[in-house]
Length: 52
Image (cartoon, rainbow, N blue to C red; front, side):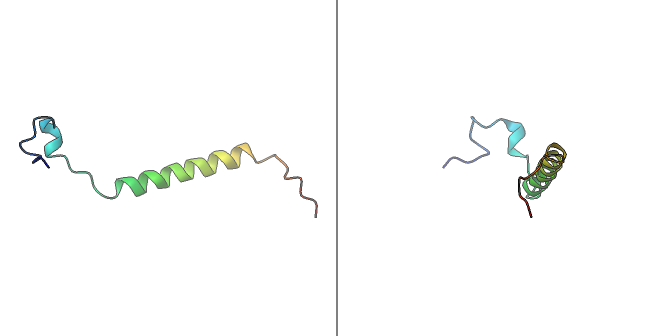
């Protein structure tokens, strides 16, 4: 395995870049809310066909 500091294939800007562990959960949360809101809006007038 190559060292990140000496590997010429990795641009210098990426060597010092740190991504926090909270990026993925936050993105997933925002996407889930968007999907829920979109489906709620699209399906608000649809009927299920279920008769009680």
